[in-house]
Each structure stands twice: as structure tokens, then as C-alpha cells.
Amino acid sequence: MSEPVFYTFGLSVWAAAPELAIAELGYPADAIQTKVVNLVEGENFTPEFLKINPHGTLPTLVADGKAYTNTKDVVHYLIEHAPKKGVTPGTAFIDTIHEEKLDPNAPLLLARTEEELKASASGFPFTFVNNRQKSLEKNSTHPEAGPFKAFYDEKKAGNGGILTIYKGEASEEAKQAFFKHSAQHWDALASFLLNDLPALLPDSGFLGGDSPGEDDFHLGAWLARIVHLTGGKADKDGYKSLEKETKKPIPPKVAAYWAAWIERPSFKRVYVEGLH
Image 1 (cartoon, rainbow, N blue to C red):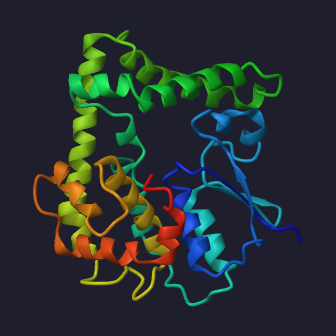
Image 2 (image 1 turned 30 degrees about the horizontal axis):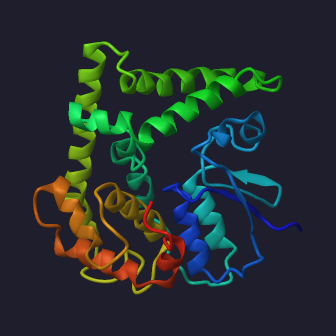
């Protein structure tokens, strides 16, 4: 039986979830083959990759002749086949943390004000969106792109809409709607951090107990991204950056959860070059 192939990228928030799992679960270094798909260059939009994962997303895992094309399924497979047993199984929380209203990718591209828009339009968000659009345009004309026409059309429209806002080519109405949507998304994240998440967390340790469980691989990656987007670092005080958005002190349970993760060798390994 061939070894599993794990498709990942160093800046991907959700690819970090299975990376944490691999580091925690005792997999030997050569047990899983890793292939990098550069999201910044839009390599996930090639017909070659879409044949593996029609959603064009990471993480993706190919194992036992089957492709696992979302974070939940990839992490679950890794737990089921891990050398380390006894990991606390996942719960409905996994679906919650992957809800659109809590999307940790969106804030990277959002802007609530003219000032934030100017920063995005002159920085990495513009580069990312512009590269994606170029990749979508190029790959949608590939001889093997036919089966994925609907995918390309939808992605070009959505990504292109953000690009027109960055370029100052969108209508005032579209721009103000973008500002409103951005503010609502950040408000939802802040509410989750202040209210919903503390109600779910234990006083110490992880959702899975003394060591990370299946739920924790998802939440750990999610929290690392939100801390990163608010300017925090992978250290004991990193979570405090969240207060820029919550406008209130971070609840003790969230602070304790952050403290539990940053001491794990797995966390230090996945985020050795910084949070993402």
C-alpha cells in the first residue's frame, strides 16, 4: 500500500489542523508524503489539482485510493490511522468552527473602513487576490478545464469582485456593502471569543482533556489564525492581541486554552516560522 499524500501550504489556516494532528499523533517522519500547493500563486486552481479536489482547497489527503477533500475528513482519517490511540473523538463543535460566520480566512481580505481598504489594496491581500484572479483566468482556458467551468466561473466572479474593490473600480454601493459585511464578520468573531467559546472550554487543558482531542486540532488552528490577524505572536501573551477586536478582556478560559497550546511541541513545530 502506498503512503498517503498530504497536500498543504505553509500559510494555510486549515492545513495547520492536520499538521497539528500529524505532530501530535506519533506519525514517523516518512509515513506521509507531503506536497506543497502554493495558494498565493493560485496553484490550487490548476485542472490537475481540481481532479484531486474539485473544491480547490487545502488540506487535501489522498490515501488508500481515496481523496479526502476537507479539513474534517482529513483530520479524522489521520486520527483513525495514527500510531497514537486514545484521542478524544470529535463532536459537533467541528462543524461549528467551520461555519461561514466564523471563517478565519475571510478577515485576511476584509476591510471595514477606507483606511483598512487602503492597507489591503497596497499590501498582501491585493497580491493574493490578484494572483488568484490571474491563475483562475489562465487555468480556466486550459484544454482540461472543461469539467470545471462552473467552478471557474463562480470563483472568477467572487474573487474578481473583491479585486475591483481593491482597485477602486467598484461602485460606492458595492464598497459600502463590503465594509458592512466586513464589520459584521469581525463582530461575529468577537462575540464567539467572548461568549460562545468560553462556554465550551474547560478551565484548563483542552476540549479533549489533558491532551488535544479531535476538536482541538481544528480550534487550535482557528485560534492561531485569529491571533495572527490581530497582530499576536506565538508566545504566552499572543492571545492579548484579540482584545483589539473584542474591546474587552479575553475570558480566562480562552487565555488558558491558548497557554495550553503554545507549550505543545506540536504547536511549536507547526508555527516555527510564526503564526499564520
